[in-house]
Image 1 (tube, rainbow, N blue to C red):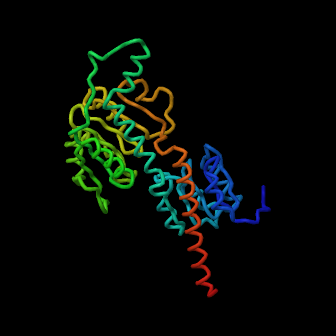
Image 2: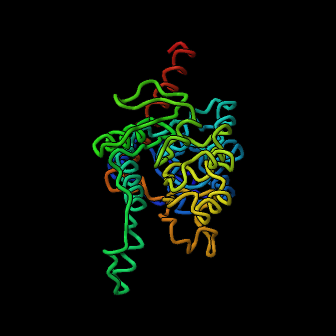
Image 3: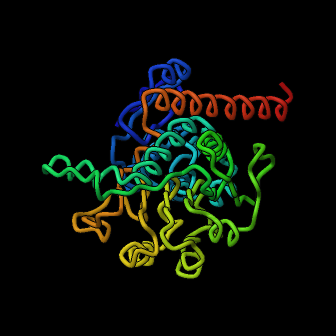
Length: 320
């Protein structure tokens, strides 16, 4: 057990951090928990090292991990989704939770459009057929996006970027977001049912909360147009996966693009494995070299900001 550390400790629930982020945190000892940190391991590590901050890349942060360090003041997400952190438990303990808002917005928006276009144009199937020696020019028909309607569930930093590209394609844009403070010109705000019923392509860009869990369920899928496309680069828990599979197999939906899943990583033989009109990517929408730096530095700055505020508040309380 190492008790000789002279600097405050920041634990990263991952194996690495961008050098630019490490530079920002030079006044701290950075300890890496590894690529697949589990709850027991994180609890032991926090008990041993008493970190002042956690930077969360992988794994879940429940109350028992927080309770293992009496010095913990901030949990900074290396990304935007904080559903893996028990936010209520953190609030009760006076621990601040911060997301790297907008840090990977460009990357996820680009990945979203990759999936939308692959679904609309039949890219995966065409590629496989070409490699198998077929030439389907006389029989293949793809979906033209011009004058079609894109429905966005969530119109924040990522959704807004997706909307801007849709406008360039000549699409109409509907959006559902009860928390939207502003929208781009040309985006029409609607309720969820109107977005689902009126869209040729639906793309999910909202956080996973108790209210949004399995919002794409049997009832709401039934509202969607026959032959519509659904893309999810947000959180897997937004979708009832079994119901989605049924919608794809029945051709209620013509194609689906998924970068997020209820349980990750996907096990062999998952219900979506081998389904030809389901395009799967391993939750890499926000994984680019630029986003890696942006998320790391944003998380580091969030740590510094919260600890600075905490230090100032302590000094004022003590009359320093």
